[in-house]
Length: 125
Image (tube, rainbow, N blue to C red; front, side, top):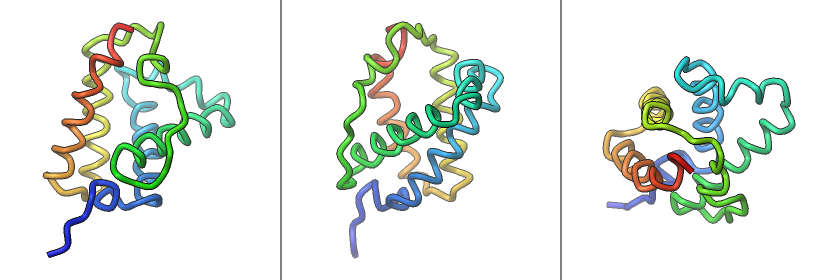
C-alpha cells in the first residue's frame, strides 16, 4: 500500500489551487466574514497575490515542495481582531469546500487539526 502525504491527498498543485479558489469564494459568500473578503473583488491583482500566498502556505504546510515566503500567521492577521465566530466561519467554509471536492474524512480531519493549531496565531492579534 502506498502512503500519500497530505499534499498529494489534496490533489497536489492543481488540487490546492482549486481548493483555494473555492475557499476564498466561500468566504466572500459567507455573511459572517464576507466583509473581510469582498474588498478583494475590487482589487483583482491583490486578490491573486493573496490566493498565491494561500496556495503556497497550504502546499508547503501539507508536504509539497513549495516554499512559503509570505508573512507569518500573526503578521498576516495583526490588527484584524478576528473573533471566535469569524474564525469558526472560516473553518466551516474550509471544511465545506473540502467536502465538496470529495476530500476524504481523514484528510478533512487532518486539515481541521491544522486549522485549530493556527487558531492562537490568527484570533485577536
